[in-house]
Image (cartoon, rainbow, N blue to C red; front, side, top):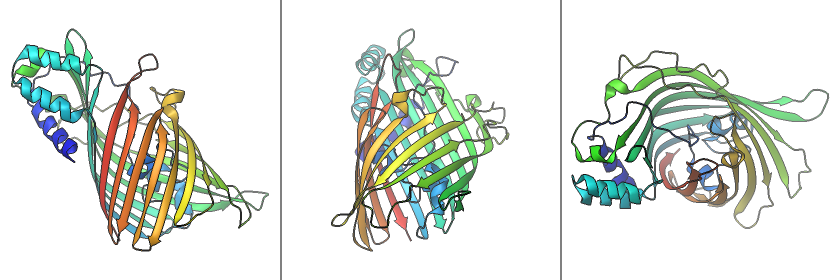
Length: 378
């Protein structure tokens, strides 16, 4: 919590600093538009599991499976582990350009990440409705251009989404498959810039709203989910999934602008495909364990086999109807993940840690991130 609070303060500190470069800052990470702390804890291998309220974003076909009616009101926050020491170092440097340059060189190659999100999801039989007024991600990446520099990449999304899922019979067989779609209206504002160490000692405005790219779009995802037919008493129950994201891929063509009336449209989404698999393992004691393996974001410009690889295990437990939760472990893009969640009555707490690949194949860089979600569920 202290890291998350400091990360928020850091945004304010850096936001009064001046812009140096007019070109956008390079960014080699794959940006995930929506995140579940439970999924993050199990390596983000969730497209064939997708059995909670965030299932509409991971695979809308999951709404065809039987599920409970629920209202999910949540507040999320996530931050990189380097935020705390970096913030303290910059604070101690004051306005001394040489000290700031030394600090930036000390953290060269690191990623200072913060991401708060706020939203509500209503789930009923076959459909879900989500309103996410704020999903803000900010990255301060420390690199060299002419001198030690900070690459700033910020994305602010507001989303309204409706998802529907159902079950269909496979022709000429006695088997069926789940299908679903997620229709989304998204407003996005993007800021990207580079500043040098010498500029960090000045007191000018960095986030110049006249340079924000902004717009809105309507797009959607389509998913399939196949539960392999097995005997009712089978110990292992496999499932397979396919999801195509941002099917239209028409960019942010709606000129809806709040921050900059003369803004250009942000870079468009990229149509990508996720392939997933899951095995529901035998129940034991209070646990309902699952293992999953996904290859995600196929088609993204920053995709590599390692960046697309997600694997994990979920140990969902239920003591009583009012006391339940999960333990998760996994691998995300080659880095370990872990998660924990517990719900007592209507209040739920979820924690996760995961590694994100922010570098390239020739120069891999891990950003170790920690996330928290507080929610009410009715």
